[in-house]
Image (cartoon, rainbow, N blue to C red; front, side, top):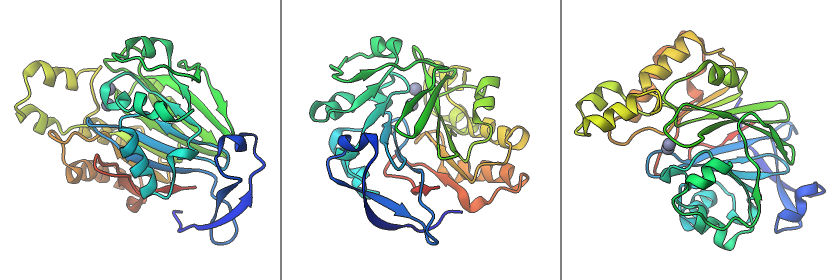
Length: 293
Ligand SMILES: [Zn+2]
Ligand SMILES: [Zn+2]
């Protein structure tokens, strides 16, 4: 399903064209003439910073702002994108690893920012948001040709959200920072073409780590983070097998290892007949493979 794409130019007649700095926008065409409707790359994920790039033909957005302006620009450049072309920023929750680049990103860019009221109030540093937009769990909104549906997750933040993003018949679920896969979350993830899912820690590594017991308890709790084991259990028992790609994200640098997270998921997914070449991992150090539909 994943194919190399070719770049061509076309004039941009979309309503959002004024938000782009150039008169032309790059339009991706797959071999055979089919257009690329949706592009996704997790620019970085983990406790040191989170940011995901999602683009359709008409809109480009960043989900969370966990990196400095320079670092975000650098990572976008690495996947052939530019910070100047970003139309919107969507914030999941107020934890530092998701918002520490917010003020810097907004300083020089006029970007529409979608953030919940409770989350904004919970920010330790509240940057001035010139173009602040409404964001609320359960209320879908349209951004260009992209429909975004935020939904609540169980996590120790004021009003933490995960997201469905849909365009051109492609459904993405972006689900990180949660202690448990509730019925609602499982329901929202069903039918996804791309599933970005947290696989935060290995239970044994966490138990043996030098973290204080209170911190370990917090991570393992219903309001903490998902373990590899929980993710494996989900793939084995509840996963509908529809996703063309699965991207494991928010891996702990101290209490997990990419090989372990991949192995646990592989073992479970093999039983569902999932194409294991399309099991991807996000990293803290740089952008993930670019997924195109
Ligand atoms: Zn986080
Ligand atoms: Zn968090």
